[in-house]
Length: 239
Length: 243
Image (cartoon, rainbow over all chains, first blue to last red; front, side, top):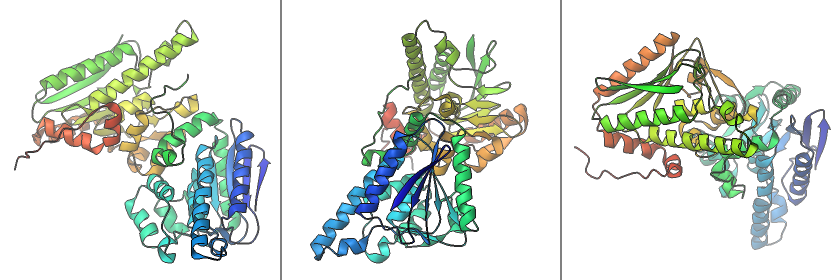
């Protein structure tokens, strides 16, 4: 499902297996547990790198699992359950007391794209993989906290419209040009290396994790509020 | 003692940060009071078609809050109180700039850090030197959180999200040309003379537009509703636009 490994001052979170890494209750629980562990073990000067094995980064919610409920109502309930239970994963990333980097090693679709976007920095492959909000194509609405995530992380209204309202499948070069990812690389090996390098550079700054997380949340107030992470508005910082 | 001067040249107000003792133009209660008082004066004397340019001299525009004054306090509790006081003053300063009924331009002659960046960004336009000076949000490196409404100021003035992240969450020291590319400042010029002359020239252009002071400030406030809400600045509707 996913593993958490510590390498020096880097926490390496890997979505394991050669499958689509569909977000179902098992993977979600696994992610929450890993992020919880990283938070508990965090110290000054560490960073999180999230990568995936295989051709996919994550293809979103496990719709097959939802549909195997047997009835239309059952499927709706399961889907709603996935939307609600994934929220704490985004919250955990937003609250994590260290810089976060993701190497989008393959396709990132819908909730999988949201997972990538929940990191501070994303790097991608140029030769493989697309960013894709499939919802409009498959007839699903986009959860409110996904909308807030897109709005606050992606400044360009045209990028949000193209991804959300047009079902654009965006490759690495375009994602880099439009500022959605930091950089695009030519191979699997290169993008992983780049994410580790970036993580190490950020970890070297030895920032106070709590301060880092607070400033991060201040960048995304609407999302933070939706996730129940609202920071105290007028609190004076402790010296 | 840290102070500023306000000069009037025709319709142009020139606010100069002058400090005989502190080359860093650190913001302490004296300088804050001096600036806010000057802005008050400019507001009282404002007419249609006014503008304000803020200039400084030397290596620094402003290196932020006077943390040395904070640390010189007798106890930890008093240090926290002094810090709180400076934050309150900074709040008042932002409020004064946002409610100033005329276009404002900052001529950033040198380094601007933390509250110095807040000071610069409180202006409608920011010009910087190409050859000297960086913008640096030192808070993260110093381990100090950035409270609202200053986060709201950054959210209001900077986009896209990655620019805000790069300025606030990455501890970067951003030179003039990069700052223009990132859309944080409007233009760069060479030399201290170069940037202040450019600011005056820009101000003259804005003065010529002869804008109604009240309309200008209300439209400005309307651009930054979240920030104004936090500063307690309600917008007033001007219901009978001049046709």
